[in-house]
Length: 314
Image (tube, rainbow, N blue to C red; front, side, top):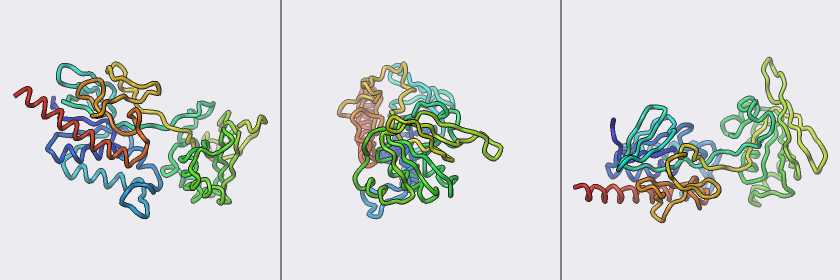
């Protein structure tokens, strides 16, 4: 079994940036990704606050540039899922969908995933009217009515993107005001395709037969204490993120009260040789620019760790 110098879990901006640094130093680098290379950044329509792109850059384009740069220096990216991590002596054993892997160091860069509302119909109609990615699925709803659930930046930004396709969008916000930035709220308020409903709680996603298939047909909600039904062709849910750490069960890695990974100032966890950076790390700022910066910092710490252990063993 080949032993890699470092295996990075998750191929978002954090790991791709880290891989640029490690692979340039001839550190054997393998990245595992279970979904989309680029992570949530890749499914963001437009990234407006990443330094160096004065007109903004499409999320998929930014992810593609990061991937090509990492691969140019020799990093390998494999599509697959890491199911567990265990440290045995100086080596880590990872159980993956591609079989067992070994590494001298591991970096967790799995980021976060969208939270679910947790209402009837959400799981049943996922992919058949319920979505978390406007960039991926918005084009299926040309001239259709949509519901967007959530009151933060993502909800506002994705709803604005969906107006390229949808005839009308109802945004359902549980609270009595936006949590999004003023700039985005102003954009939403002046868009005549969008209606915002405050103090509106989603209760159920309802489906029925559409063109011979079971698909979403409406959303039942409570608005200001009264039941209301929104007829819709699809629902996009943007109610926040949670860290992807399920595979760390039994690894001994310490998490904070919200499930994010704790690290020291070198971005190493309480398990020696196991590093973490980006949105999955406790204290992360949830910004692409800082995730890239943390990836670079983690890479330098990984190099230092490997060099120190090589000196000890020589």
